[in-house]
Amino acid sequence: MRKKFLIFLFVFYNFAFSEKILKIVSGKSHTLILTQDGYVLAFGWNKSGQIGNGNNRNVSRPVKVKLNDKEYLKDIIEIGAGDIHSIVLHKNGFILTWGGNISGQLGNLTNRSSNFPVFVRYKDGKIFNEVIKIASGWDFSVALKKDGTVWTWGDNKYGQLGDGSTINRNYPLPVKTEMKYLKDIIDIKAGAFHILALKKDGTVWAWGDNEFGQLGDGTYKNRFYPVKVKNIKNIEKISCGAFHSLAVDKYGNLYAWGKNWSGQLGNGTYKDRNIPVLVKGENGDGYLKDVVEVSGGRNHTIVLTKDGTVYVFGGNRFGQLGNMILKKVNFPIRVFNGKELFKDAYLISASGCYSVVLLKNGLLYFWGTNEGEIENKFEKSLIHLPIILTKF
Image (cartoon, rainbow, N blue to C red):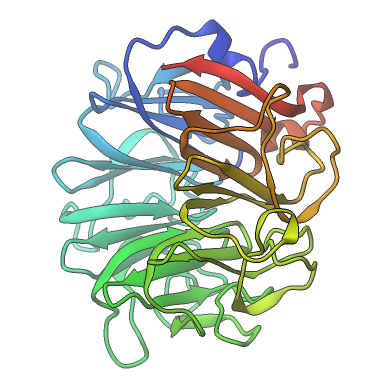
């Protein structure tokens, strides 16, 4: 198995990309890559068909996702990956999904897995459309329509579908507040079992699992309808780790809340927070400023500031902070590539127990390990310092 399937870590050295890459998104143990011309590449675990290549064999090198036996999926503008399923948005506003479907996360009116993309459909069988953004939790899916409403389907054991129940659903329905439908949303993000939604007025709303305070409403109660996140305003960007939440306001301040056992909130403690707190500055001095992007993994967080500096904090058992010491850190530190501190970065991504950064010079760096490797104890695959995967 080791020989046949070295996930993620060395695959880029052996694969010549002919298309420019726009985005890379990883689920629990598989990865999707969006190209400039609208194709999707995938590799990793495929036991549920989440690679989308028509079979269930694990894939150690990126392959183009197929629409069917004869043609490739194309004209895609957004991608998302869950635990064992994948979701993409077509340029014409409809959604395709594939992979595991035991909870109805494919949204195609069945609970059968599919190793080819299928259309997400309304309950009446019509194709779900007019979508502008998508997100994926572990076993559920989220869509934002152009009218500002949020729609969900799949696993609902923590109320993450926002319909007032804990019943799984295999077709999309709009998220409600207790009295009316949630509206005026401009962005959506999903954690393991919770969802964040950003309103155009700069407020953030959350629902689903709240065991660690990741909903930010001052409680630890699961919420079956959206609740307003407390003590933040003028928010422009949101992100979810598995069990923690993050937000950036218009002034570049970074807030975090939820699970903090590994220091992933970056506030100098290891205590969970059910109300947003400001993230500390470098090495715990002051507070972090000029944040332009943030991404949350399972137990760590990666941050990009406007000068191209990359900061990390949180869990580090698998090298996901990229600094050799393998100890958790509860405040931001800069990323070191073995020769110098990172600079001139412009894209970042954290998922599971690894981190990815794309620099302005086209170099794509990776460090940490893939969750599939953790589960299968491929300890030799750990990368404790950033390595170059490829150059675009």
